[in-house]
Image: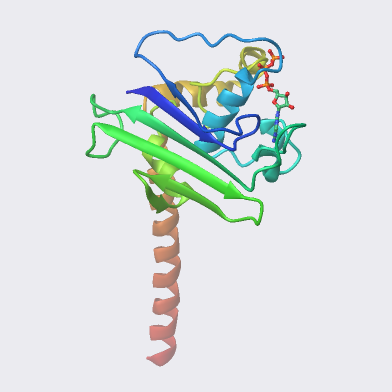
Length: 199
Ligand code: ATP
């Protein structure tokens, strides 16, 4: 699996629609200070479910929408779509190409999309879990991330290896199943009590 294309419209400094196409090998993005290189990695993390405006270098989520410039009025909507090549079947979805999108408007409306169908954030998270692509995973190593990984608690560091090994999604499913089992045991106990009272 690899990132094939990013399409952005109204996201941060990208007022006009921008399409960036990538090849499977190494791509370097170069440009002067302030030209928008980090905004591209912010766009990727945003689509993948980043909820913290601060970690997107803003103070509120609306800050991802183009705020206007000397020549242009602000825009009302930001939209980003990633196209992933899934011909190796890394993503658990039966398509060779998968798009993941997110859009937000100044009025507060917000949508996630998988293959152009509106979905929940949870669906996006489940789709990419275990691929290393999640917003907390290791596919985006920002400035200072290496230092923070090295100084992390060992349990946090283990999380990075678990994601690389594809274990995270199984752990999440196990936690969910354990919680369900606990609730069911609780309900069963209540039913046993009620039956006891009726007898
Ligand atoms: P450096 O090399 O210094 O790290 P960079 O190429 O990574 O720079 P970015 O940090 O991606 O640059 O882009 C910063 C630019 O994006 C700033 O000029 C800032 O004004 C602009 N910008 C950020 N958010 C918005 C927004 N919502 N609307 C318009 N412009 C924005």
